[in-house]
Structures are given as structure tokens and as C-alpha cells.
Image 1 (cartoon, rainbow, N blue to C red):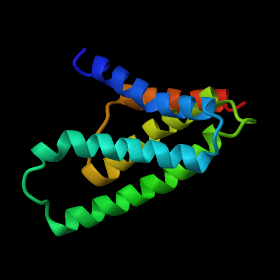
Image 2 (cartoon, rainbow, N blue to C red; image 1 turned 90 degrees about the vertical axis):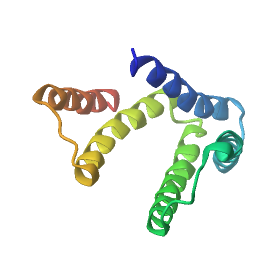
Image 3 (cartoon, one colour; image 1 turned 180 degrees about the vertical axis):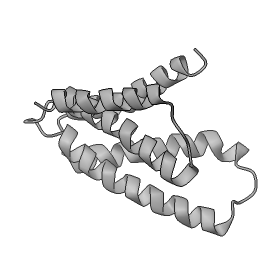
Image 4 (cartoon, one colour; image 1 turned 120 degrees about the horizontal axis):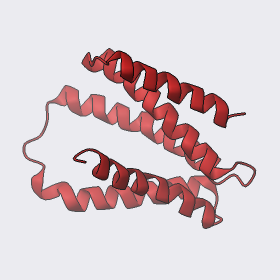
Length: 135
């Protein structure tokens, strides 16, 4: 429960903005920009008191680059979730499942995380689920 409940609430927060974005009937770039501004405003107002000392320069550069990559993803994600011809729920589900697979791969490559055979079976099941949803 220590992981499940916070993960469920965070997932709800993450999927709310694209559904509301499509519901708003505005263009994708506006959806992404407004969601990003709302995110930045909240994170800045909550975390400014607990930031501590400035991280090393290399860490700042790497995370700014990662943020830029996230921004590219956010732009294209916003374009897709606001497209009336794309079923938003299916697109969000597929994207989230792909994030599980990419996250696992990148965590293995960058952080050396290891997984059990049962977890690999779960990842394979997710890949199969993506295949089925995409049909």
C-alpha cells in the first residue's frame, strides 16, 4: 500500500489534465502550454522552501536537457490528446504502458536496476497489452 495508493493518486493527477484538455476544446499547443505553466507554478510554489543548496552544474545541465526532452514529448502528447479523431483514453493508456517499458529500460541502462523473471513476464504482458489495445 505504501507504493500503490500514492501511485494511484499520482496517476490520476497525470491523466486528469489531458482529459480536461480535450474537454476544453482548445488547440493542442495551448493545452500543453497551460498544463506546463500550471505544473511549473505549483511545483515552484510548493518546493521553493525545501530546495536546499544548488546542485552540481552537470546535474543541472543534464536535468534541463531531460526537461527539454520532456517538453518535446509534452508538445506532441498535447497535440494527440486534443485531436478529435483520436480516442483520448486509448491514447493515454497506450502512452502510459509505453512509459512503463521505456522507464524500465532507461532505469536499467542508466541506474543498473535489475528485475526478476516475474517482473520481466509482467513487462512482456504490458507489451502484449499495448499490441492488443492498438488493434
